[in-house]
Image (cartoon, rainbow, N blue to C red; front, side, top):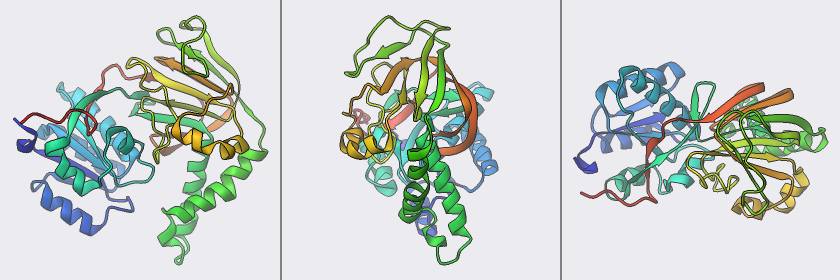
Length: 338
């Protein structure tokens, strides 16, 4: 069966700013009747995941941001495992903010255009994800990025209570207020926090400033890092969002994820933002590892995000690379053969 003949399930986050009634109507006209699902709550999302597995869709596209993708993949893979069947192929429609996966998978043309491209340009490849707290995700992090996300949610909630500001609650103004007014001042004045990270899996690789392995492999039970940090980041894809290559070594090995401990300050970030964005910035205060499973322990609880969604604070976390990859639609991969 060719891609053109396959049924494609499309799941969109009904709470995303770009998911309007007009867009839903357009998508419903493109996909077959009954194949468009709009989720507005966690309960709806989990019910949709079960229905998708029961109907045996070969391809599922998610729209609404990296968090929507992370949630739906987690729920659908779990439902497929419970039924003893293979999960479908997953794809990404660019409808949210950040959209790291849009850059990683080439989904840059917009939701409607990418649905059309699927038939002629949508190749496939395997994608390994992280597993933590029963969630499958391409990236997660502690520190400055999670703090900025927490502050954005605080500002968004505050804006929602003021009628004149409500329309700006998920846009650039809310981001600017949260980052400039809350996150940067706190990062600038707060002392460095301390983290201890232990390898729990297969031997981990320590990378030098040039991205090449240095020293002996770090065996299971040995400490990878014990020291100060501004951010502790984990990813299986190079992008953090908005096209920023925060994880330049994430795809060096398919059986490892990139662990990056960041100890540079806000001034360094501002001064070197172009190189950081391109993934070419190198500094001895960026500590990179390729690991299979780790235990992260902080002296004090730290703000935490998974796939761009805030998950509160954690003092300890275990993270590992998923045992089985998922199949994804990748517009950089060779297109399907009819």
